[in-house]
Image (cartoon, rainbow over all chains, first blue to last red):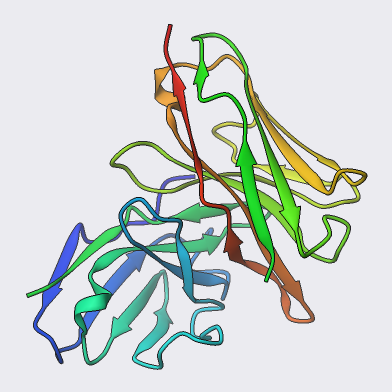
Length: 109
Length: 122
């Protein structure tokens, strides 16, 4: 069970869009529509931003959106804001277990 | 809003056992949800450790399965983690969390504790 692969970092200017990829295998992302995304600020606990690939919990801004194609899931942040600067992790169900992504640092220029 | 609070020794000796407890408030460990542990070594990413249901069914990360036990205490409304034969590589912030379940399934970790640092050192 290897960690899902994410880019180490992405960046964008305020108002722009950024997309974070999350690549797994046919044993996790490719088989199950149970990919979630978490936002984490330094020294803080992760926060659920997206679940079941595309769904947003109550209170999460609609500029956060998720998608999936094959073995790769993606998180898009539209209209980037300074408060979006954080680490983001994907997570996939893998059949009686979960696997997290390697994490992506989002920088707002 | 459910609250989760981790507790346990912050320092564990190599080859010893790391033991942590998670107290749950404003929800019941006997509810329809699962309860899970996730860890994060300093400066690194998240790693799923395992989960448990109040009926006793548990699932573990295959890479840790031989050393991990997660249990639930319904009378105290808490669940616990034990990790045996620890090494420095087990030094991490350990989070307890809830895996939310509804009619569509049980596949999102929606509430997290603040995390507790456990250091393995002599």
